[in-house]
Length: 554
Image 1 (cartoon, rainbow, N blue to C red):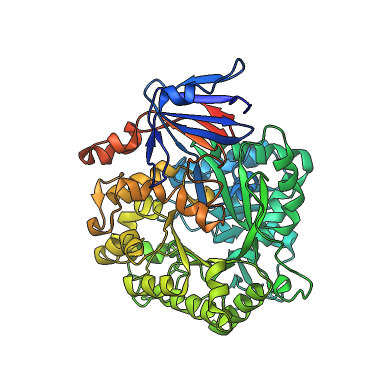
Image 2: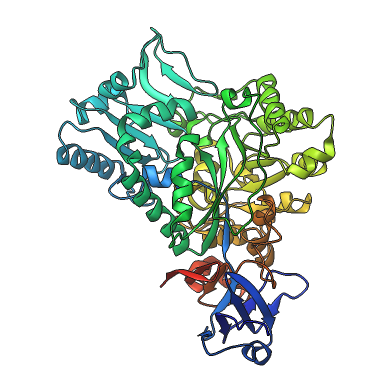
């Protein structure tokens, strides 16, 4: 006899995301796996004396969300309590940012202070955090202020000294320490390895095993709170792998993590390094590939575009030269060499890219890496991350060669007006994050929140893909680039599961797949289009299950 299910859900619509059977009345699960989906009576007939029957009471059940491009480890290191979190979503003004910094300095005299999340474009009264200003705020200990994007950091004199950054310090590969006219470091670092050099000065104590474990537990719980059951970690430092494996082994682990390692030249040059293959979903931790940053972020003016940044007060505040076109972090030849090396090692690639100029360079690098065996490259599903300024023709070229894209819709949600009025023009804002164009080009598009760069919430991504609305002003940027509700939900479930090579196990509700589940307060398909602007008020997550185990309830 078949064993009875441990869990049965009834009393609300079951939204399977399976195109063959999109809706059901009930779902059963045992040992972390879905065992039956169908009508209420037929599924209830399977219950045994120990079966827990969950009455949805009209709520909707759907697959747990898959965060295609997150940063759970960086969230743990940067914003887990008691971190000084000054992101504009939590601290809206520059005056309040400085107050938080003074409080942190006063609370721990002589101790290093890490402040995460400034945004000069949203916190309009915040002055540029020069070395001299930070010395005034914290004269006697290292102080480092990180931008919300994570692509830049600002250090005071004590932090520069502790990091041993001098005029003679070489720039790391793909990153730079900004210097003045005399060659002296200004205290600003741009891009991965340079920013990381400052991070270890002020956040090193968070690497203590007990503190790191607690911070990861907090980060994972934050994902579970918004219905996420799997997150790709798109910037894993290899030194953190042991801690991630330990977190996955915890009996109450709330999140499945798939890491993309930071793709350094040293890893590319390692002749013994080989990709070990994609871990099955039953394993809560696995490595999925290598990550490169081809360029920076629009918020720092460090992306390569075919069109100029504007010359105005906003762009001058962030230090841009008039009509700047930023250089890439790597030359096209360097990108090609790294992509070829990691592809030869068997690692699927993911590359951060916003500018249309950079997008072409990355596609060229992927094409060169797969020149000898294009089908092998296609099977690896090489990824393009964020894709702010990408054009329809570029999306079509990427789809034709087998590359796949993940879009950061919160750029429109939080910075739509900034893109239209400060950095570029309304025309550019209308095609920024052109998700409709990507979908129509044939991509299995995923949406993401980029970890701590915006509030982690897949339903916010869905809402923005539906409306293209910036809530602070109510303005809409790009009505022709909207998705339908079905497309937007697939972009946070089935599509990112496919990008992670887990499409046979998660992202959809079918017998034999993992019982990763999100309970929503109502059926998102029932929300009328005229209420999409209030989508997050209409629909919310009330419970999350990872492999049939509850990880969060409202």
